[in-house]
Length: 312
Image (cartoon, rainbow, N blue to C red; front, side, top):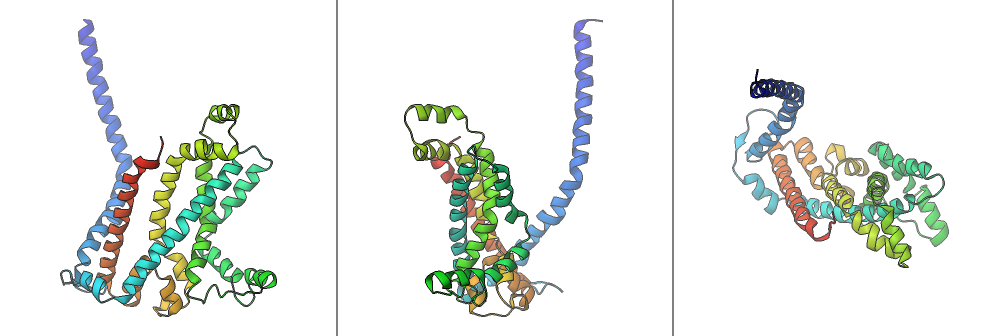
């Protein structure tokens, strides 16, 4: 048998083996694919459809065209509050979270004692349920017996009403979000910091650069890919904020509307109230579609801006 015949036989056997491998791979991927189609793709398509209908969640949906979108932009006064509160939360929590995280991560990346202990301590809020976090902070910020208010009263003679003053409720939610989310960002940033070669710092030290100069000229530019990942994911998470609003706003589950609820309500919370308190599923779907496009546009803008400041 010639070498060419052996090669052709080996090639055919390899092709059969490759097809078998591919078939097995698709077999393992099939359950996940079916789950994605049933629980993600189909609901997304249905949401787009129901956003053009009048539907209460049961019965037959009535096609109304763009009536829900007209109501959303011209008749619903709460919708404007939901947009402004959502953007206030995004800009009030995400940048502060990332700034604190990069500073703490840089310090923890240094050779200090018990660094593992500090990593665990900072990450603990991230593995704690949001309900527990909010309940603890509601107690800490209570204007009658909260530890934070007692400390402020003893030091400065002030007792802010963190949970009832509509000028402070959004600030309170941003602070809670920063406290609970900074640990995750620190862990991710640490992985990026540890991938930076020590030779850069050694060369900078020889050239006479101090710690601050090394941070802004070496650390910050080289960790921008990790920062970009965190920026995109944290912004998307902030736009989808719901659980903190639900837990911080009294009587939110009953659909009650008041100054505190209005000062906290976000777009996702508005979707929830329209769907399950007002039983206007079609209108809630229209809000969800609007939020989808807002997040899409913001993410695209971030992707375009990536080329200007991210260094790979």
